Length: 267
Image 1 (cartoon, rainbow, N blue to C red):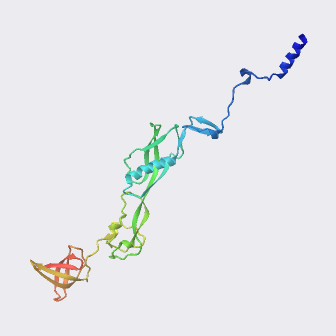
Image 2 (spheres, helix red, strand yellow; image 1 turned 120 degrees about the vertical axis):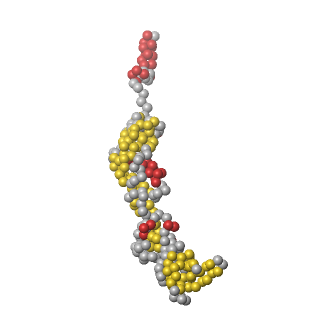
Image 3 (cartoon, rainbow, N blue to C red; image 1 turned 180 degrees about the horizontal axis):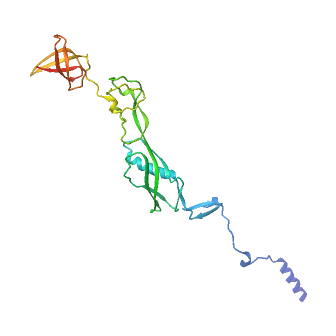
């Protein structure tokens, strides 16, 4: 009986699977692939591990866009486009993690182009974080009206003779014309080469009558009206007075220009 008990004990010991207890097994390790995880705000992957609390970077490109949008809002009715080159800071600025917003503060010298210093307020998670001083160069462009062919002095410009060309300006109060309607019907005050951006100084109101034109002379008094023909001795605009030679008598009269090809005298 004693031997049978020993044999059974040996057989039982051989068939048992050894299982370490929790103290011997050590901590459990669960590996989750990075592709199966979704980082939250402020978390960046690094060698498959997500770290929290790493600062964001505010790039000069984002600062440029903020300043550009600010100036476009101010100048949209005066320019076609605004260009900004950030000079300082040139390196990215480290900022706290979270949702970031930029606000460009109004400046006294915003009515000029060139080099500017801007104050940019950086807000993270809805709270002001820091005001950054930014040095930038600012330029702008317009769609200037230009001639598409050579014009002689006194020649009248038609809408079909005009086009617009994107042109860089160096001051907001530029002298160039951007509306074709301001040009059409005007005459060249001087010879104008093709593709020249037009200014008001290059144009003038065309003469209604020119020297040597054949015109109708009107003489009115009460209900009486007399018409004859003459030749102008000078050019002029509506409302101006010019000398006109009567073709019938040869007599020169002082007459007022009232319409194209029509002058009026008093008697």
